[in-house]
Amino acid sequence: MNAFLEKLSHVFRDQNLRKRIFFVIASLVLFRLLTTIPIPGIDAAKLSSLFANSQFLGLLNIFSGGGLSNLSIVMLGVGPYITATIIMQLLTLMVPSLKALYQEEGEAGRVKFAQYSRRLSLPLALVQGFSFIIIFQRQGIIPDLSAFQLIVNVFTIAAGSTLLMWLGELITEFGFGNGTSIIIFAGIIARIPQSFSGTIASYDPSQLPVYAAIVALSLAVIYAVVVMTEAERPVPITYAKQVRGNKVYGGVSTYLPIRLNQAGVIPIIFALSILLFPQLAFNLMSASTSVFWKGIAAAGLAFMNNAWLYDSFYFLLVFVFTYFYTAVTFDPLMISENLQKSGAFIPGVRPGQSTAEYLSKIVTRITLVGAIFLGIVAVLPLALRSVSGITTLAIGGTALLIVVSVVLDIVKHLDAQVSMREY
Image (tube, rainbow, N blue to C red):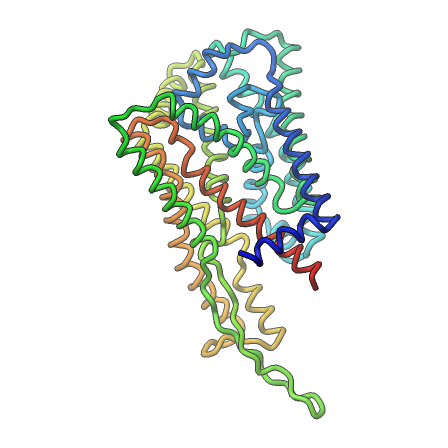
């Protein structure tokens, strides 16, 4: 405890760290102000009713920090940028030049890759902004707009999303941690008072055991997230001895830490971003004059509104994206080559291809545990909501996972900054 307080005092004594903390706080205050500026002519009562009856919009509202529920100028949040990142990372599996740019060209390659993602996010923001306006118009939440008003609103919404993307980049560069994750984290934290007030307003004394079970389950999930985030599978590594002159180098044994959950919270964010597109497409097709397209839209919306089918599909997406993101970020062949170049080897395993296969087998096995855990945490609150009927649980598990993961990441970044300055 004393060590923690000492490090905390060091954070505020250091001028550079203070500047970083204040920059993050100022950026988040600006973000919260932007979420309160709505586009004109909204029917607030219909909007509130729509969000109360849609678990998908409730989940999507996490990433806009409450901006979507207000139909603010930043209603898309960082969603288009996340979707663009998903598309770019999918392309690395199909385009060898992009894979080389992302994995082999170092920091300069990653900067260029991120630039491509930012450029792609703008057309995606325009498409999503247009789709949401049309959907909300059909729901009677937004009045009929002229062509000029529609264009202005779409570009305003796209500009708001681009501004948040830029703000996230600034937080990453001049603050600490991942700026995009911190913006999502701030949106979740800002909605906690509203969730509590909604729970208190709908409090039913007969459901006291249910509330007690939910609190206990939340604490258990927080504990499990911390354990899973920090869990590692150590792979023993030995450096070969080298004789140079009269000195002997190497012969040291250490280990390669492989995280149980390599992907963190990214698979859940990816899954929610992907779920956005069929939801938008089905809503747009429902207004078609074609009987065929109307039938497809009705079947799709019925699937989305079926809690158990939706939860199962959500679980499957989280599971698949956990493996996908781990495959993109963890390259066993590259690690094997780097070990071989540095004169290191895994005892009992041949260097080169055999080492890569050995590491790949370990990652595949431990990722199974991480993928199942992420999927359960993601759908557990939705399933509990279906069973208990308490609507405030709609974003509970996903929000808990994101909050705990981001807090751990922020603590690690601050700890690294403090340790660097101490040395």
